Image (cartoon, helix red, strand yellow):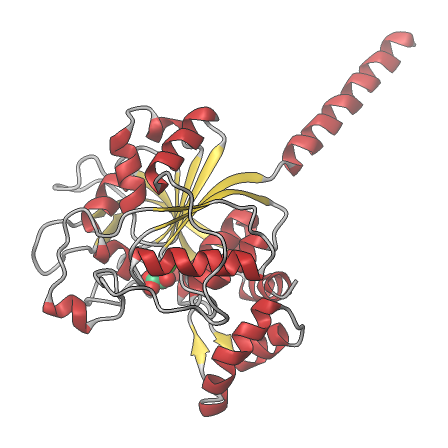
Length: 342
Ligand code: BDR
Ligand code: CA
C-alpha cells in the first residue's frame, strides 16, 4: 500500500513539474524594423507586451520599414507609452549586408536607406536612450548565456541575425528557435511577392542575410505572405481595439481613425502580428514542412524565397523549415484585439 502511495505521489509531482515547465514563458529577443502602431511591427510589439506567454529579454532594431535610428526612437517611445521602459533596446544594422539602394528601391515602400534624422514621434522623443552595446552583441551574449533557451522573433530584414551568426561560431546552434516574418512561397496559395512579382519586403531588403540565416540550421518557423493574406484588419476590429482607452489605442485612434473615416471599407493585412501570435499559440496557424531557400543572385529573382517538397538542383543546403500557410482567423483576431488593448 505504502508503495502505491509513493508511486502516486511521484506521478503527481511529475505532473506538477510538467505543468510548471509548460507554463514557463518563451524567452524572446524581439528583432524589428519598428514603427509605432498602426505599423504592423508596432502592433506586433503591443501583442507581445500583452502576452504572459512571452518574456521579452530585449528589443533589437534594424533598418527596414524605416532607418534604424527611426526604428530605435519609435521602440523607445512605444515602451514609454506602455510603461515598459525597463525593457532594454539595442540598435542594430543601419544597412543590409550587400543590397545597395537603387532608384527602384527608392520608388518602393520602405526607407531602409534613409539617412534623414528620425522625425519626432507623437508626444516627443522618449526620455530613455538605447543601450550602448549593439543589437548583435546583445543577441550573441544573451543566447550564449542561456544556450537552447532563447527564441528570436525576427520581423524585419534579417541583417542583425545574420551578423550575430557570423560573429560567434556557437551562436546559431545555441538559439532555441527562430520565428521569422518573411518570404512568399509560390508553391503554396497566395504566394506572390509584395515588392517585386515574387519577392517579399523583408527578404528582398536583405536577401544575403535571409539566405544565410535560413541556412544556419536553427529550428525555424516561417510566417510568409501566404499566411498574412488570410488576415484583414477592418473597421469592425479597429473599433473594438479603440473601444478601450490606453496610450496605444489612443495613438491608433489618432492615426487610423481618419483613414477608416475616409475609406470605411479599408482592410489592412497583418504581417508581423501573425508571427508573434504563432509563438504565443502555435495552434492558430497551419504549417507545412518545406525546403526553403532565397535567391541572392543579382537578377530578376533577387530576394525571392522558393519552397519545395524536395531539395532541387541549386538549392543544395536549403534547410527544412515550418512554413505557415493558413490561420484560424477568428481566434487570432479576438486574441489580438483583446491583448493590444489591455
Ligand atoms: C513585412 O515588411 C514590412 O514592411 C512589414 O513590417 C513586414 O515585416 C511584410 O512584407
Ligand atoms: Ca516588420
